[in-house]
Length: 151
Image 1: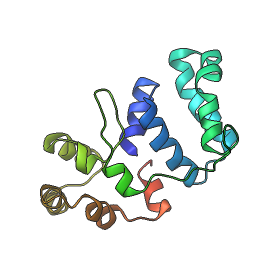
Image 2: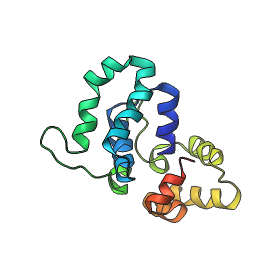
Image 3: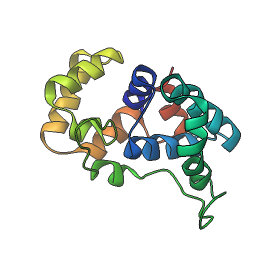
Image 4: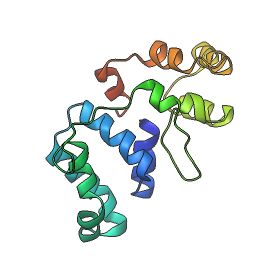
């Protein structure tokens, strides 16, 4: 999630898969619909303008909250769904433990303050394809721990 937030702030845009994964994460963390609309509009409007945001992106955010379309109240993606995603070129969603190359993963973890023995333990688990175990053991599953990634 931290990676997507950084890319959103850098590019003022995320492709559909990133908007879905990150947007539903924020919703699951307790972000209200009005705040979600304001958050996404503030970022996207820096690149595309507020009118285009309202026309092209606001509907999907309201849809994710069950306020448009078939009125389904969507939940955040599970770890398994995130791990099994297939991000394409220019996408920033998915699981860094699964989708980043070793060098990029090391750099991202170092940026978050993970180094030394802890970093090597993570890389060992990644090399053995234990992506979900890695996320759960390193960062925990509680939403409050996930939110700490944004600090």
